[in-house]
Length: 269
Image (cartoon, rainbow, N blue to C red; front, side):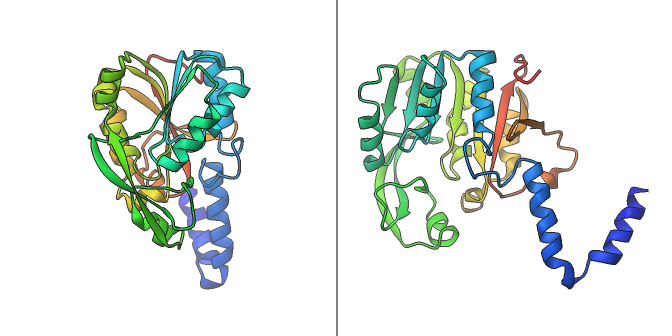
């Protein structure tokens, strides 16, 4: 029956005339699967996830990797969170604003470094007119090709999470949120020891168009996390567990938030 419906649809609508119609259906379908919902904190599902974690898991610490000016940390505070928040922001000008915002907030520690697979000095790219924007990235193509903008370069410091955690005396991570414009896989590789020993409980990882510039497939992230974590795509009011039966449905380079939950935690039960 399904093949018959496919055949009828192909006969009727697989024509140049219906291009806009088919593109519209594709966008609707993607939004229903948790993609392209970047319009707000609520639409992306981040508000739902954060509330769920605070209510059900009650984390003692939260790591905001790619904190920018601290909007995510501010959202945590507005929901009454009183635990420790570590905000990682490598861009010096953005970091200065982040640090100033939370100067009087004892439970927020701002770290002027980016996370990566290894410790090194690197260059971050941004719009030439910006003083540290949310688009700042380690991949020049994201600025020049995706955002069609002229580039400015700034030197930054990167560190692996394995090394930073050892130096900081951290022994567990309750919630690890990563939004670093295509460099997410490298940050996860720098936390490989923590992932393999399951010392990180819950992760939120942005994936999308920026991963084209970094040449990262979802399969790369899945291979690192799947042995010890259940993987979900975030919806505005819930999650969609990823079953990997049809891999082409996961290699979609459009804005989305992935959630990895350690298998012993029933966060969405």
